[in-house]
Length: 258
Image (cartoon, rainbow, N blue to C red; front, side, top):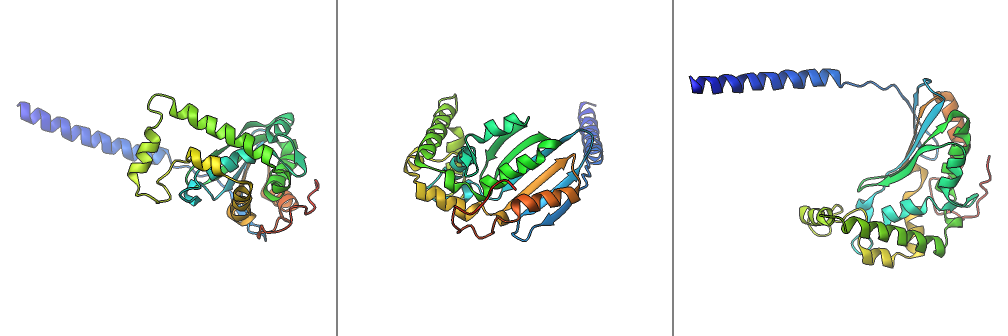
């Protein structure tokens, strides 16, 4: 009797589990309508229209992460994320300060091995300003980037690394990463990088990183919320359309607010 009970229990558990999985699959199907278009310079744009609130979520997704680094030059992707908040040629000063003045929320950037993204939620009335700000740092960052900014953000990143590693089990991520992949593999180092590599990061290195990976053809721009595809196309073309896909052009190219 005891064995029969165990068998019955296992069968019921399997049936219940299968039923729950089926129900879960049925209830988690999500259909989010969107339109997609690509500018002549290669910038991919995705628009999701939703007018429930006068807000637009904007996410600029660069297809570059720590996997694009090389041994001896780790931590560049995350360091550059920080540099993108230090101001651009036509919008000097801290990026966050300018965005907070127009009511932006959920304003930040993140880096992982495969991508770096920058995002904010803004009032519909501030979409033009936000797109101009995003386009200026995509197209005109290097003219505002100086050694003082590099040294400041390098210190911020290194302090972030120290804080993380001084927590209990703080080095486990590094140990797991190093021991999961063979030496030299693009995923064999952590996103935050090595302290010595961060010390060695030069102005030339970060300039080359920008020119190589921060062109519009390597970007997906997402606008979701109180905006339609036609309006989005007009605005994105206006602010991003003149950024060449080839990033090796003079940094003093005209880029005033259009």
